[in-house]
Amino acid sequence: MPFLRLIILASTLWFCGSAVAQRWIPYASATDGFRIMAPGEFAIEEIDFETEYGIVVPARIFSHENDTGRYSVTVVDYRDAQRLHDERLREIGPIYQPIYGQVDVRGSVAYAAKKIRDRASTIEYDAYHYISRIDGHQLQTTNPDQTRTFAAIYLYESRLYVIEATASPDIAPPGMFQQSLEFIDEDGEVITYRNFRDVYKVSGVVER
Image 1 (cartoon, helix red, strand yellow):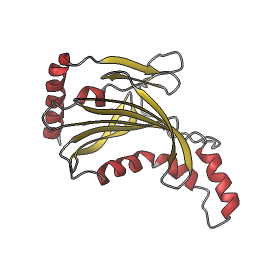
Image 2 (tube, one colour):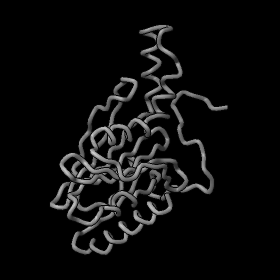
Image 3 (tube, one colour):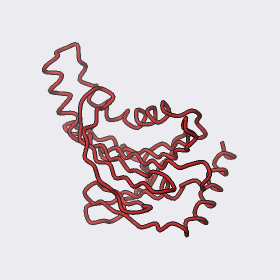
């Protein structure tokens, strides 16, 4: 595993050295709580996202495509998930378990990672990661068309962040995009923690 981490670090440094040929700009969304280095202006699309447990929540996709590849940040808003699961519980009755609302949110990183694995031909890296002591996951995969995907997934305050860069195999790995994510508050200040914490808060659930 340490050897693989060295490979990732070397790939990132290689990419940063070649990034001068491409204009990278900081992009921030206080509404969605993130900042990232972007390869250009994002197109923004609002979509309905079906969760693993079959409810529909809002999501926003920030994407940019150029001759080096496709880059996207998808922010899935699970903050109303518990209410939607409670409505389903009232409709279906005892056959539906109340805990599904919490499980749907807590398992969202694993669900997003599975969707990336399912479309890949091979998986080169697949392991836990964190930013500012906020838990997440990173993947590097090769797709059937030989493009490579560099992905990072994090769950913070019941919002899921899926960062993906998909590039052709003949360019340097887009590590800057994958690893430049920062979480910010409504004033644009970077959020960081000195200790790990339980960030899987579900609306309507009181933790004791």
